[in-house]
Image (cartoon, rainbow, N blue to C red; front, side, top):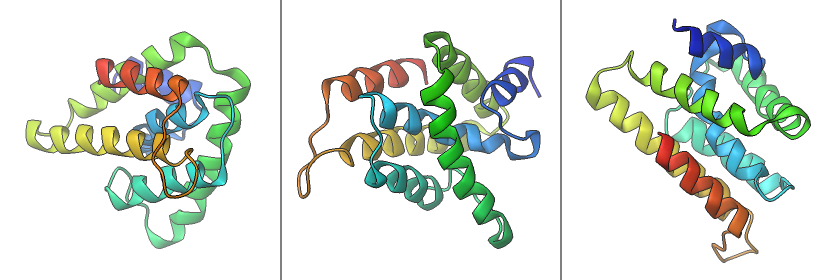
Length: 145
């Protein structure tokens, strides 16, 4: 495990045994980009993280994952710094390097999709409006991953 992965796990309070949970954090960054997080955004991050295979908790670990999502939003809102996104991107890229190129590409696409879905979840019902703050965050994340 690289030092950047360890630093990100420590910074974002992720247990070392759940390092793949780092793959969910970019979508959470998008969700909080406009300063508020709706239930729809939180559910979107959780749902797409599971559906797209970013995390694959066992049945007894699902409550841990759900608590992780809720706690991470509070952590990011409370103590997130601009440099944290760079640390996260570096750690995610290091973690992706541990996978085959094909598998890493699929995970990267899933991260991008989860981020986009989190941004779309903040719009009014039946639309897919994305705020300027969320669009800026999407661009920053996509440029780094």
